[in-house]
Image 1 (cartoon, rainbow, N blue to C red):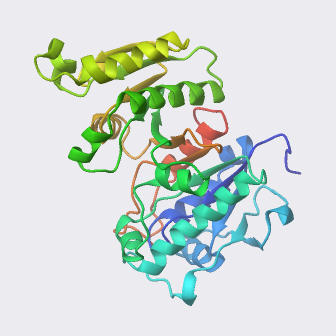
Image 2: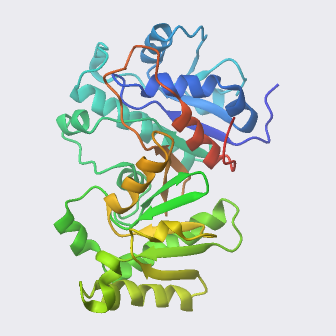
Amino acid sequence: MPDHRLPRIALATGDPAGIGPEVSLKAALDAGVNGICRPLLVGDPTVIARHAAAAGLAAELRVISDVKNATWSAGAPEVLAVPLPEATPLTFGINDAAYGRAALASAARAIKAALAGEVDAVVGAPHNQTSIAAARIPFDGYPGFVARETGMNHHDVFLMLAFGDTRIVHCTLHVGVAQALALITRDRVGHAIRAADTALRRIGIAKPCICVSGLNPHAGEGGLFGREEIETIGPAIEEAKAAGIAVMGPFGADTMFHRKGVDAFVVMLHDQGHITAKLLAVNQSAALSIGSPILFASVAHGSAFDIAGKGVASPAAMIEAIARLAGRQHAA
C-alpha cells in the first residue's frame, strides 16, 4: 500500500528524443525514490514505453488522464498522459519542433497539477533548447518558464543549483552578458537574496546564512575594477540585512565558495555558478526554480542525444532533484 504521508512528485519527462523519459522512468522505479515520495510520470505513454524497451526495463505502465485517478502504487509506474503533438513518430537523438512542444507541454501539465494541489512538487527532465527554438516558443530556461506558467514576471523566479551541502542562486541566467549586466540592479539582487532566504526556510533551514558574490574581479577591489559592488550589490545586501536576513558580501566569485557554514551563495552571472557546479558535481546537481508558488526542480545536464535510446543514461541527477524536493539530500 502507498504511504499517503509521502509527498506526491510529478516527473515531467522532457524531450522525447533525449534521455529525459529514460531517466524519469528509472527514477520512478527506484526503490529509494519510492521510499521518500510518490512519483507520477507526466508525458506520452508510447514514448516512455519505447524508452523502457530500449533500456530493457520491464515496466508495466498504468496510463491515466486525470491525477485524481492516480493510485500512487510503488512498482507500477503511473503516467499522466500528455501525447506527442500531431501524432509525431519518435526518432531518438534528433531535433524536432514537435519534441520541443512536447517537452514543455509535459512540464506545463505537471505545473498545472501542482498549482491545483494535485501534486506537491514537480521535477522537469532535460529539454532540448534547439527543438524548443524550432517550435518558436520563447524559452530561456525552466525558471522563466515556471514564472510564466504560474502567472509571475519571468524575471522573478531564480535558479538554485544544489549539490551536497552547496546551493548556488543565480541573479541572471540564460541571457547574453551585456543583457545580464543591465539586469543586475539593486532591486533584482535584493529579490534574489530574499528568494534564496525564503526557499531555504521552505526546505527546512530555520536560520539561513547567505553569501553574495560581486560582479567584477575581486568584487571590484574597492572600486578599482568597477563600482557595481559599491553602488548596486552592497546596498542590496544592506537592505536584506535590515530586513533580518543573515547575508554577507559582496565577495570575489573566485574565492567565495571556500567559505564554510554557508547555506546558499548568490552569484551575479550564469558562469559564476555553473562552472563551480559542473566542476564539483558532474551531472549530479539538482536545479531548483525558486521564488514561485510551487516547488519545481530540474537537472543540471542536457538531453544527451548521443546516448538517447541506448539504455545507459544515469538517473542520478533526476533522483537528486527528487530528493531535494522531498526534503532529503540523497535518495539512495
